[in-house]
Every structure is written in C-alpha cells, then in structure tokens.
Image 1 (spheres, helix red, strand yellow):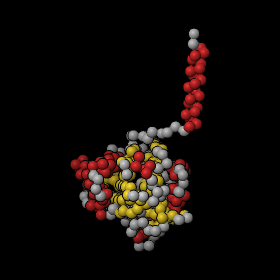
Image 2: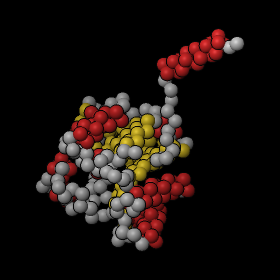
Image 3: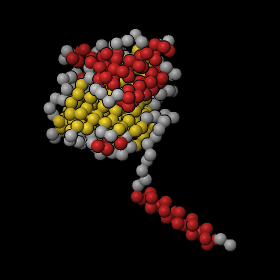
Image 4: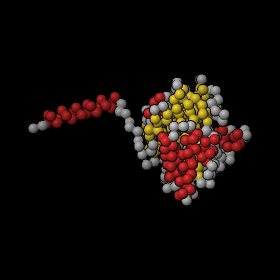
Length: 307
C-alpha cells in the first residue's frame, strides 16, 4: 500500500504516506488517556526490515513508557529511547532512526506541552507570538498567532543556520540537509540522555495547533512559511495531503512522509491510534439517510415479490 490516510475527528489528522519508496520506514502513534496524550513519529534508517523495525520500536516504547509512567515527560522520553537503543544493540544490526515526540497534559484551563526529538524529524506550533521556548524559531505570523519551529535538526548543516550563515529555507533545501550527526543508534548510546536533557515545556491554549513530521514532509516545502496556511485551516490534512500529491507529481516528494496535525483541546485526549489500528470513521447524516432509504427499498421489494 503506497498511501494510508487515517481521518480522526477535527482534533487530529494523520497521514502515513509511503511516497515513491518500495517500503515504509516511518511509524507513528497518537495515544490518549484522561487529561493527557502522547503523539510521536519515528523515521527509520537501515532499509527494509531494519529501519521499519527501529521506527516501530521507538514509537511503541514511547507509548509503553507513557502508559507505565505518570511522572515527568523527560523521564518518559529517556526510558523509551534507552529501551529502543538496547533493542538495537541486542539485534546486532546496523540500523537506527529519528524521532519527535510530544506529550500534552491538561492543567486547569491550560494545556502543557512537553516535547523532545532526536535527529531531523520536526515539530511546529501555531500559537501566540510570544516566544514559546528558548530554541523556538518564528517562521511566519498571521493575525495574533505565529508559526514556530520548535526543534533543531541534528545535522552538520544546521550549524550554518544557527550562525546566521544560511536561512531556514536554504537549510531545508540544502543537498546536505539529511547528513545526521545524532540518531537513535547503538553508536549513539547516550541518545536517551539527549532526549531527556533537551526536553522543552510550555503552555498552549485551546485552538492552538501542532504539526509534527518526518524530513520527507518538511523538505517538500521550499518555503517553510507555506506551512502556515495549510495548518491554519479547518482541515489541514486535506491541504497538506493535496500538497504532497502535487509534489509527488513534480518529482519533489522522494521519501516516506508522515505527519500529525493536532488541534489543542480536550478532544485530543480521546485519540488512540497507531498503524494497523485504523480509526473508526463516522458516517455523515447524508450517508446514513441514503443507507436508510436503500434498506427501506430492499425490504419493500422483498415484501412485494414474496410469494
């Protein structure tokens, strides 16, 4: 299957797109409990039957740690990444991956976001104009909100951006943008510590939005500001999905691509989906009405022709 789309209610939109690749190395998870939810995307490296294993382990370990631990988010991130690295070491295979993960918890009328990352999968937020975290980069503004990039790519080329030698758009389109310096890998045995130490926390308001994705998605936007109108929409999934189809037709979508677009609010805590457990789609009143008419006609015809 080249493309698997899962439509949730308006709180979460997910696309798990294989793109032009022959295999899928991405994995995702959105798992909620009363008052809290974890969202994660992992991008595997190592080819078929290797990269896909690491990405699945990473997300499943994050979800497992989330369910087991009720403590600080950074401890959950630390435990899950360490568990994945241990599995890689025991496998003896040269495989690895990247991850971006976020936990949202309800505190009074506010929503606390805690997030981390390893590699070059990214997390964006559409929220207020006040800088939300120390490493956040404002990309674009609209009315009283701004689109922020909350993560830093673990790549050599990222240093040129931090030193103001390249713009974010130039880094995003640079031919060396995918040369990673830090991943979830046996050679990076301290990745769990990295995920814990770089954890950031701040508060979001109801209606704010989060957008997390693998590099296969963000690199299709030549201008990062173009993400804003897609996210600031009632149905960001359709907007971004249409964008990916266009990029694929133009030969500019060359990788697996997975994204999660989430609207902050209590409905977010009702989600519980991972690949292989598709969401139940709600039937619209129109479809229900049509089905009812069809069923009535069938029953009527059966009664008429009944001997």
